[in-house]
Image 1 (tube, rainbow, N blue to C red):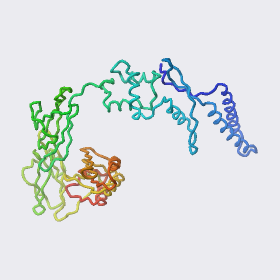
Image 2: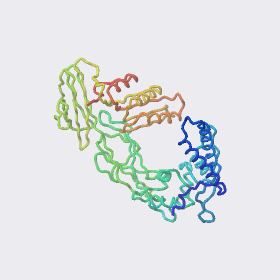
Image 3: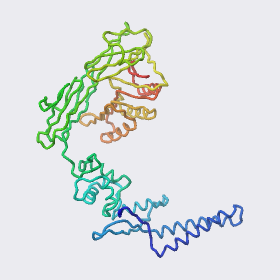
Image 4: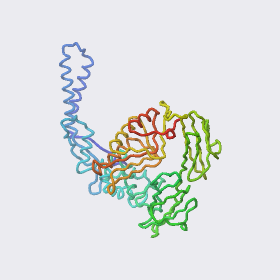
Amino acid sequence: PNKNNLLVLTGEKSLMASVEKSARHVYAVSKADEELPETHPQRKELDERKAQYAQDFQSTVLNVFDKLLFPGTQQNADILRAKALDSTYPSNESYNGAKQVVKTLTADPIKLYTQVPDNFDMLRARAEQLLFGNSDDARKTDLVDKLRQKTQMPWLPPNGFDLLIQEACQRGVWEDLGNGYMTKKPRPKTTQVVISEESSPDDTGAVRLKIDAVNSGGTPRIHYQEDGTVSTESPILSESVLTTKALRVQFLAVDPSGKNQTGVPATWTNRLTIRNKFDENTRKVELYVAPRGTIRYTTDGSEARNGTDYSQPLTLSEGDQTVYVFAECDGVEEKRTFQFAAKGRQEIDIKKDKPAQLFSPAPKRLDSSAKTHEGLKLAKEKGITFEQVTLQIGSSPKVIHLSLGEMRIHAEFLEKELASLQSLLTPDAPVILSFKKAYTPTGFDLEQFAKALGIELKIDEVIQE
């Protein structure tokens, strides 16, 4: 039976008659209210009595129902504990019965814990003792059932047990085994390589990677292999940074102590960098791909993947022209769209009512705290999102770097992160926000955003369908 799933609001039996009496008064006056017209001479007296009886009924209920009964234990026996309902509340607030119940249950002796992370150690210990018992592993559904059955278990808010599980897994003291079972003794972990890009591909396709390992002991050994299959016979990284032009690099972490089993290799895949060189005088365009690959292109808007093989510079017409480019090498693909203005015209032809994407190989920068805050405020108003964002606050030795890869980030998130990180440094610490991609609902939004922040837009940086 769900003995731990019961809460009773009650009072002294001898006072229950007064509740019934007050309820009868409320009922009687409500019936009279239905029958007595507004013009009746006794209407005013009825309204006064109606208000008075309603107030009397509420006061009676509050005075009578002044006690909570909830599950507990005494000498290893399940009982219903009685506790006086806390009736105190701020004078500037109206009475809220649910809040008073929560206030009562969260006061000593506590039955309800609303803040799971703050009470994690105690809640974890209770759960391991009462829910897991002598078993290391248990079905999550069984744990939830026991939570409702064991009267020694505290109560948690809605989704509170899920939050407890999440917190325990994040701290590494429990583990979700992925088959509906939880364990309070996590399995030995296999080694794992963590890869982050400290730079985007340059014009040669070179990328600077930062490599680390988890579950690999204090002095992990990391093997790597460029454009091949890694093994324990592969070269060993001598430092935590690798600059590479390879299309793919495999990494394998080994725990020299042998405490952790060797995991599966991690594969990092490079991106192809497509760029162009345009001669305004001859109207010739040269296309390049790095680190290597083949190029196809079209100029009529059709799929570049099925376009013409690039073998020599293109000659453009004297009008506006768009070149669609596709590059491929060993299964790695990339697309770019380059827009070229008519001969002699420098301004960018942006379609104001169509979605626009800004893609700049060289990051666009908001190089002050004021400009960064202004930019994020404007981006939030216009629904602009960013990709490949870097946020730097402060200066060495007190400097904070936040790097976000190929994921679209909303301005609200960046605002919150910026405020949190700025609180760690002095108010005058320098701030630089840079990004390589921005997505705007319309071309007009992009123009306004760039104009307000002094961002220069180049012809081949704006992409629109």
